[in-house]
Image (spheres, rainbow, N blue to C red):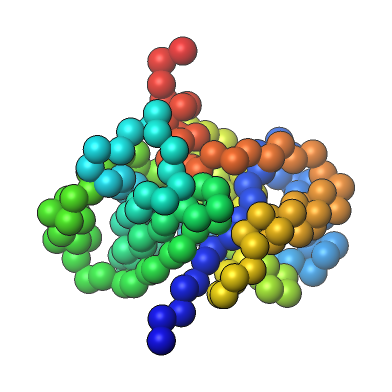
Amino acid sequence: MTHEVREIEVKYRVSDLAALEDALVRRGALLSAPVHQDDQAYAEDGWTYAQPKIGRSFARLRTQQGRHLFTVKKPVDNAMACLEHETTVSDREQMHHAITLMGFHPTIRIVKVRRTATLGDMTICVDEVEHAGAFVEIERTVQGQESGVAVQEELDGFARSLGVALERTTDTYDSLVRAALSPA
């Protein structure tokens, strides 16, 4: 029996990290020590940023603390409600070649410093993304037929309850970094 796991998230641009950190502490969310993440994003051959992401598969190769993670996501409800499968790989370079052989092409490199916390069934990620700025992601993993949009509304309610200035974005980090690097 296959268990379809979906990662549902909301993302916000953060203008005052200290205020966000204080609000999270008040709610009992203690952020981890910072970790450096180096992500290479991949898209199916033939896909471009001018096309929608829903229904298409995207891959990511992440290096964090000497470990390499291979992830495939397929947006279902929107770009932040995805089927997701992830595994550790031993050789980043060989996995890169395997990904391209499977019909994906590299798109954007995303480098960030991430701190995480768990609060109930939510994972909170506070990210400082090179070229794009500071963000907070609030996510929950679901199985079955639970509506991704309904979960996003619930997560958005939590974000708004923090009482800090947050600007919601529906863009993924690869799109945000690509936009930041594009000539104006």
